Amino acid sequence: MAVGVFDSGIGGLSVLQHLMQQSPDEYFVYVADSQHAPYGNKSEQFIQQRCLEICRFLIEQQVSVIVVACNTATAAAVKTIREHVTIPVVAIEPALKPASLKTKTGKVGVLATASTLQSQQYNSLVSRYAVNISCYEQAAHGLVELIEAGRLDDPQTEALLRQYLQPMLQQGVDSVVLGCTHYPFVLDTIQKITGPEVSIIDTGSAVAGQLKRVLSEQNQQHLTAPMNALKQHLFYSSGDIQHAREMIGLLMGQAFEVTALSV
Ligand code: DGL
Image: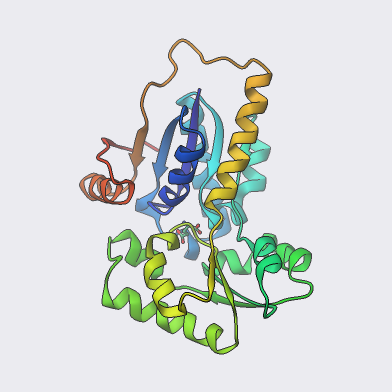
C-alpha cells in the first residue's frame, strides 16, 4: 500500500528522505502545495481547507496512511484532518522534547513559521516540555519563500539566517530546533552560523520511526495491498511543474516525474 505525504511545498521532501530510508519497501505519493506556499502567513481556516482537499486527493490515490510533513499544517489542521479521515495520520511538531533532554545550558532556540509559533499546539508543547528550560523563539519570515525559489546556497538566505540566529546565540542557546520542514535544506548554512558546538535538531527521523510503527500495525492487521497497488513513487505539485521537477531532482538527488495537482 502507498503512503501519502504532503507539505505546503518542497520542505516535506526533507521528511520524505527519512521516510524512504526507514521504510524502503513502501511507495510514496508526495504532494507539494507550492502554489499556496508559504502556509505560515495564511489563516487557520485556509490551511485546514487546503489540507482536507489534499488529504482527500491522497485517499483517492489509495494511500493507507498520511504523513503531514509540515509543522504549520500540523499546528493549524491536524485535529480537523483526523476528524475527517479514517486512515492513520502521522504528524510533525517542533522537537522541543528531545531538545529539552539534550540542552546543557538550559537554553533552546526554536526557528519556525509565525503561524506555528502562535499556535495552541506549540504553546501546549512548551508547557509540557519546556518547564525547566528557556525557549528563544524566532519566526523566520521569508525563509520558506527563498527555499521554495531554490535559493539554498545564497547570500540573501545566509543574511536572513544570520539575522534570525544571532540573537538566540547571544542568549546562549546550545540547541536549535528546526520547527519547519523546509529548514533542513539550509542546514549547512545554519551550522556555519551557529558553529559546530550548537546542536541542530530536526524531527524527520522521529516521524519516520512513527510511520514504521503505524505500517507495522497495519501489516499485523493483515491489511494487504490492493490489486492496483502503486509500483513507483509519485510526485504532485500545485506550483510550476518545471521548477518542481528541478527542485525535487536537486533535493532528492534523483530525477522524478512530477504531475500537476488537480485540487
Ligand atoms: N514546511 C512547512 C513547515 O514545516 C513550511 C511552512 C510554510 O509553508 O510556511 O512549517
